[in-house]
Amino acid sequence: MIRALILATLLLSLAACASEPAVRTETEIRYPPQALTAPCPVPVYNGETWGDVAQYAVQMREVALACNADKTQLREWAQQQE
Image (cartoon, rainbow, N blue to C red; front, side):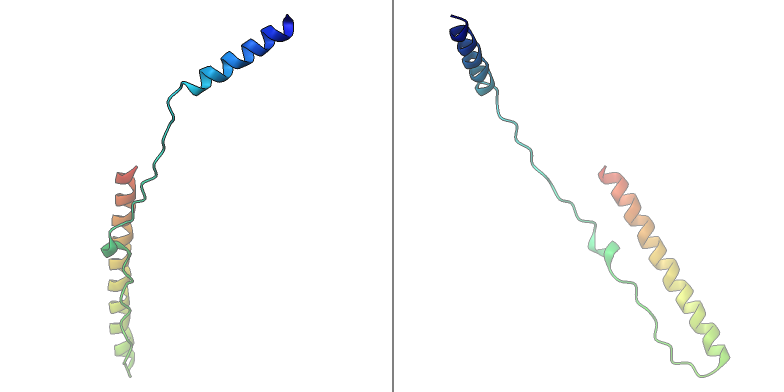
């Protein structure tokens, strides 16, 4: 009698689980805009004097500032995706 009661309880438990709808999860992968992940151009040094080194330093600074601006935009994009 007790075994029959336990068996009936287990069968009801299994039937209750089967009647619930299945949960479906989809993952959406988002990539950042390609313009923000492009490599930064590095100017070629062709100088021969100390003045050329100074001019090259100015060019390198401009490249670094442009790259940092891209990285800032990338962080802003990532925050918008959250």
